[in-house]
Image (cartoon, rainbow over all chains, first blue to last red; front, side, top):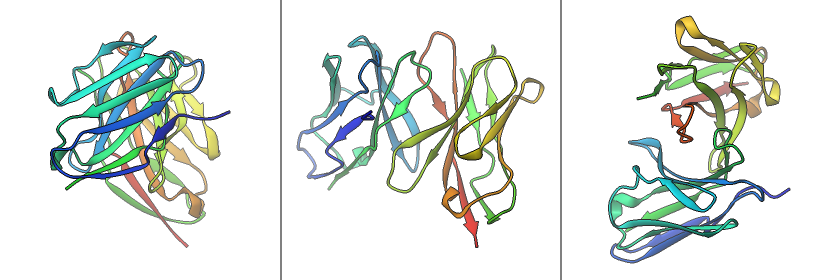
Length: 112
Length: 113
């Protein structure tokens, strides 16, 4: 059974460029979460979806960040324009109930 | 608002020794509690969870944790540590209604041969 799939695993981009991170949740999981991990702030929730609908986006840092879930098997997190302070590991997680969450391998983003 | 404290940033134990990682939470009602493990460059793997019922829960890889409401704690234990247990461990709390987890800052475990 495939776990959560994220792509790319590593992304290096220049400041000002658009970055798109992708996530495929585990089949049958109705909840999808985007987290960000940094040394300074640890793991923090950005946004989560239930049945493809955004439920809580209070963690999205600012308007430069946007997330979509066009269908049950795909979600994107977009940063436009990117800034060096966006450098972090971005995790996608999915869940059946929303409580027990299963994480993907993460995307390490470096903005120079 | 809920919060999680992991007081130990870094712990070193000898292989074969017992392990206890501390976790304290702050939440008004009965929390949902989790322990995750993260190996370098990897995602987070769920070790165990507590929702209700028996306060001693068993997880994967020989780990267990005990929920103590009076102490607001959910400490992770393992009787005999293996070198492959070296990783970072995160305690997390969830609450009824809001699905997002709040994570502690993590404890990095180093295992000496």
